[in-house]
Length: 92
Image 1 (cartoon, rainbow, N blue to C red):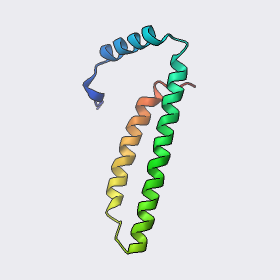
Image 2: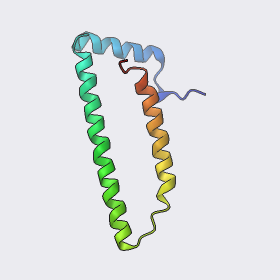
Image 3: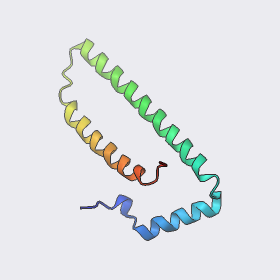
């Protein structure tokens, strides 16, 4: 079963990509994608740092953090979906 992402069909995605190419030009798109990738990586690193600090602080205070396992599984699922989408547009 394929989930529609943001309720956008293939034709609409093609049209959006066409407009992006027309506005930015084909030579600038790899640079834009690289910048977006770096930004996503920085965001991921920042959220991991925050999560680690929260867990460390909770352990010092003696707070049970076992309930976060379910949330982490949901996050992994979302990350997998994002990687599946990003894998179709990444360079090889």
